[in-house]
Amino acid sequence: MDALIIKGGNILSGEVDVSGAKNSALPIMAASILADSPCEIQGVPGIRDIFTMAEILSSMGAKVSVDKQTVKIDASGINDYTAPYELVKQMRASIAFLGPMLAKFGKAKVSHPGGCVIGPRPVDLHLKGLSELGAEIKIEHGYICAESNGLKGADIFLGGRFGSSVLATANVMMAAVMAEGNTVIESAACEPEIVDLGNFLVKMGANIIGLGSPRIIIMGVKRLKGVSHKIIPDRIEAGTFIIAGALCGKDLVIKNIVTEHLKALLDILRKSGVKIEAGKDGIVVNKTEKRKPVDIVTMPYPGFPTDLQAQMTTLMSLTPGISIITEKIYPERFMHVPELNRMGAKIHREASSTIAAGVKNLSGAPVMASDLRASASLVLAGLVAEGETLISRIYHIDRGYEKIESKFVRLGADIKRIQD
Ligand code: UD1
Image 1 (spheres, helix red, strand yellow):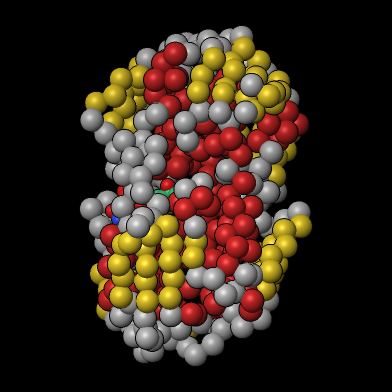
Image 2 (tube, helix red, strand yellow):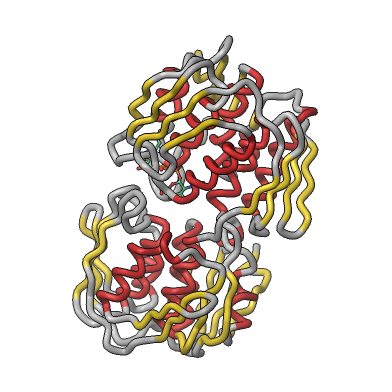
């Protein structure tokens, strides 16, 4: 298994290009099933989740090619409607096959994704939304088996205990675009990745209004055509580099970003005293010594993203004073905390919050990556820690970050990938 060795203390400068958004690319790949002709998706990140998604599509009978940043999908040969356990267990986003498979073929069998290291991951909202469109759904032998004789538009309230759901909104939207009549999704997710998926569907011929708002209205159409589409930049990768800049950047330029998608992060960082300027091609971040502590609460978009909570915890663990970070999306998502504490951080967990008393330095240590974003927080910690940090089980990071160590090395970091 691969591991990363990081020698901390280097200053990061130069330019880094953010890759396309994983969370856009994955549902958009699933949505390509709906098209009558091939789709071409550009700006796709070279990460493991994309290859897993491609593998699932191929296992169903689609023709898929992944060449650099372009994925071509011809779904005309699909003759198997199952997303199998062996592949789904590697990537929870496989649930995004349910909606388009049902809409296109009237049946879908997707392994139940269960929970994962960041806590329970229920799918009740996905099932509720699809049932209200007329699907018959059963859970059998660990699989979600859905069938329909023709979906029908409906008024669906899709809010849950933790607010809106990104992939439930994606699933219902993908199912409703070819349903008979109109669908209204109330409490829809407003994330930019949902807007990107919606724009892809609209290009294909779907009739959707209200994207980016909590009420999405969909007028069903009979067929959708294959199109070419470029994925939006990954705001979570961008945010990770911005936080790296706040920790150890000198005129670090982050390119290929949509600043508007990062407002919650930029606002908090500015409150903390981090110097961030809009440059010609992106944003420029500099390390600031005198940061102030902050109080952060994760929320659905446009709130502070849960996917940047762990990385922000690294920054706050090195910011003088007491910071509070409250996780409102995944109340158990704190696997990074004990590892950061092994490196000298002083973070105390209290229910779904962490309280970080800023320390002057972290010290390099062997640590274990547990999930995608927790791994990124440990990379950030390693970049500024004194001495050497060994991060094991980094396959998690390869799920969501394209060539993370090469990107950081080009900025001046000392990181090596080794076989552990
Ligand atoms: C997506 C993102 C993930 C991000 C998350 C929250 C993708 C591929 N993944 O995951 O990176 O961390 O949004 O921004 O886009 N919930 C229910 N019932 C459901 C579904 C969700 O209660 O049926 C809860 C979840 O447990 C969580 C909250 O709703 O507490 C939000 O989860 P959701 O938006 O569904 O996450 P995903 O779409 O799986």
